[in-house]
Image 1 (spheres, chains in turn brown, cyan):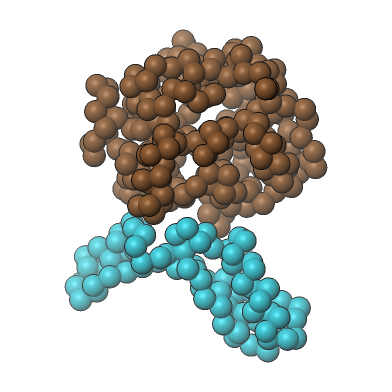
Image 2: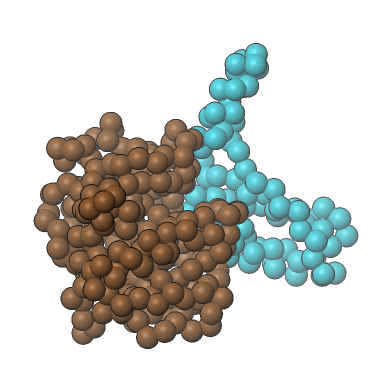
Length: 229
Length: 81
């Protein structure tokens, strides 16, 4: 299993995610956003950060960078792409995932540990998790408020594309446990063919016993044994 | 040629910044403001003499980068030859 982490100007979780992937025995390479080709890889990771200073709209300028053409090609071949936080914003701006991430409803940058419920544990990214279990993961964002048309939200629900939702520590999905105003408490989704995953929480910041717990490592461990079929 | 692009949020999209501005205006005494929606203006200077061509290019810019059509609408006008 090989992963390529894309580094944009302003990425700041690229090295954290490298450590987390390597702990899960995944080989990594760092790829600069202006490179024309992607190294041979099974998984592309778009890390968190503030690519291009969040100018225009978060992730919009990064979504047009040179390497993204290759990332889009890679995803169309059915190979894996994961975007964390700013990476999720880049994925929606590149239209690899539907919907959009707008300003948090309370207009504040939110940096805290929250709970998410696993709704779909059958994706490549969540194989090692248990359905309906609650993971404790940190969030740190200003634009994590997931928005899409009602029709699209219903489709996401019906196709089991919503992988994680914000919840309380007992797994109740309600208004109180929604930190940022996301529709239906959406914290992470996959595309229709389920090879592209975007999430606002930072699993790489919860992959070490010394830091915020190890719930996040379940995501990376799910990817360890992924073999290209 | 100079063009102006205005990007606004679609009607059904929540605008928390607009509501915060409205509340602030109300606190300042502007109590009769019923609604505020915030948007963006882009002033473009393009090397193009043909109006139709300039507008068509600006349209492409809006659809590819300047606006996110999931939540935003745009309008384009020529401001100066």
